[in-house]
Image 1 (cartoon, rainbow, N blue to C red):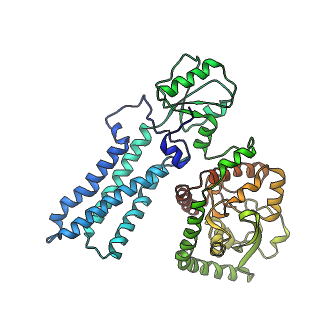
Image 2: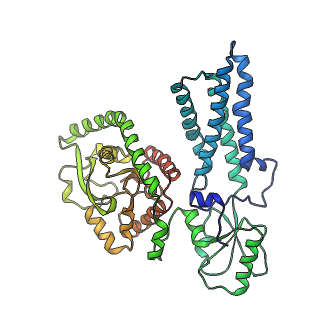
Image 3: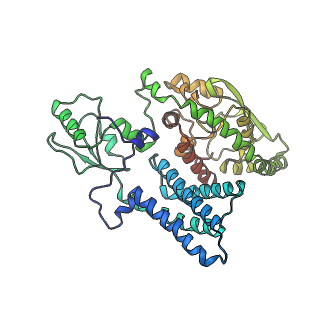
Length: 435
């Protein structure tokens, strides 16, 4: 009854992929993966190959063969990346089409160069320029036709569930009503329910209608793990993948080394401006709680006046202690760039729960159950809580932030890291959540 589709098991969030039964139209078939892939191969691979002979006077068979194979691989990989990110909470799939295909086509071009295979620049460029609008179009169509309609049993507390706007809700009033028009059935499977409601759930499962636990649905739609009723047994489901932990550490180091030239350039300008403003120190160091609860010193560009350490440990909006240059650095997260040192030292990651200062960490641990569990993964420069909620200092806000941290740990995966990276770039451009 609680069995979920394969994508839910693979990615870790409810995949609500069944189309809303009321929405019909001639474009509805494009919401299916097979038609998206077939159309992408025809438009972005076959069509450029047919036009290539007219564009190039002396086309080489070898370059044509390599280019067609390379663009076909790029189309398949691009669609695969989008499909893996699509089930994550709050994803606007269309916004990931361009970066996904930039990455895969760039990778294919680099591979062809390194392997010294002949290839057609026209085939690669034309294929890319056709693939992006096609997959942007079909993902927009899918978003329209595959909004879930979920039937809810009147058992337990479902008020919070039906208030969520990410799905349409159908309340079942009688246990003899079989909601075959719905994409799935949601129930509080831990609540005491009458035998007739249990028989209804069993019937739904036999009819092939997915049955979801309400707690999992709320988690999947909001990107938060409820922690108020966690038990020791619940923590077992929050263990991050040990394989990805090792892979992520290698990827963090490699990305830090590749980003060093850019960081040194931007950081050099920031350091010069900080020094010119008040002649004080360029860097700020502070003990933070890190991986496995071990303290470390975090590096940041100094954004406050030299004597600001005597004030409150919380940063307020329009805090007078922040310098003029510091306000700009904070808004666009440039002050975080020196933390590449912490990444290279293995103390931090690019993506993870944000590390708190030692006094705050001790205070939160004493007041919030299971707070220390967030230290099971390396802290990050950016994280799921930062891009979802922004800055937090009050206890109630920190508790809400912890809901997001636990979601990140539970669904620890490269796809969630890709989503956070994309939203971090948006945050840097907009200044969301800065103080």
